[in-house]
Length: 342
Image 1 (cartoon, rainbow, N blue to C red):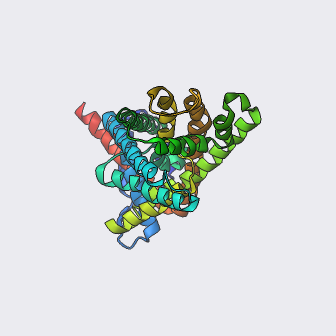
Image 2 (image 1 turned 180 degrees about the vertical axis):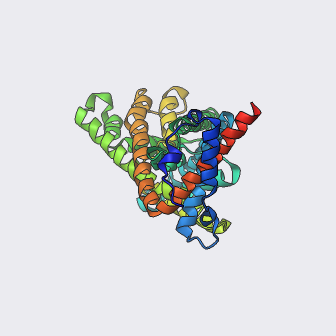
Image 3 (image 1 turned 90 degrees about the horizontal axis):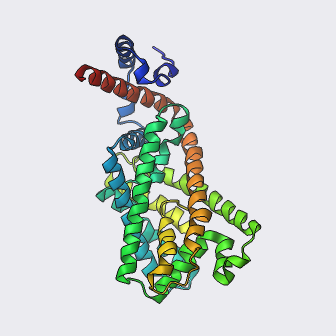
């Protein structure tokens, strides 16, 4: 029995009366979903099927859990960056510095995997489904807003405590300024570092925005692959760890722009000049960093995820159709139960 997917994904649940709801449930129950749980699924299809379920369920967490998951992930980013800063601050060899940065920062994903947490950019894995109505915008936007707020707060709390504890010496402070703040604003950062706001031109601003945006697109190509790659290993914990570490290592090694991780630099740019801990930043650097890096990185990450998930979904089309029907059936049953119990 071949069913038209559109009849299951376009109509809001509230628009279905009880008889129509039961009719849709029966139609969807007639479909064979066994293909989704087959042990013979190739690794790449297995990863798609299970990532779909895990992230979809994550989007439906209760709001407190969403916020706390974001805060935890933000703290873990801070932990990883402290390791990066101390390990690389006194190294002059650029290649060694990049290799260490990639290796240490990729540990963030293991902390989240084993201790819990949520990343905004991981939720972007669902982007393609928003345009085919496989996911609802209202649920998606609420979850993304809460987890991103948590990410920002988590990094902010950790950064403030680092400044209060005077954790960093002058070498580490200089490294944060040069690499994690000025360096992530490209040419505009160079101008701020050498001459302040007076040297900034419109041309420099737009070039910096363009560089950040393009780099952020590339970043979320890899983040989406990391999210799915860990689920492609069919439950092998060691293989999942390797997949996570490998892909995140590639993105951090290349220095691609990540709208969550870059809040570490943003918070230091905002708080450093007023902390009395040795930062020599322009007091406007923090707000400029948000405009030049955080905002375009957000849109670049989002677009990068949309492009990559579109390709991934095309490659897994037959499974996407089944998954949308399966979870539509789940939603219909929950709606029916709620009506019966109300």
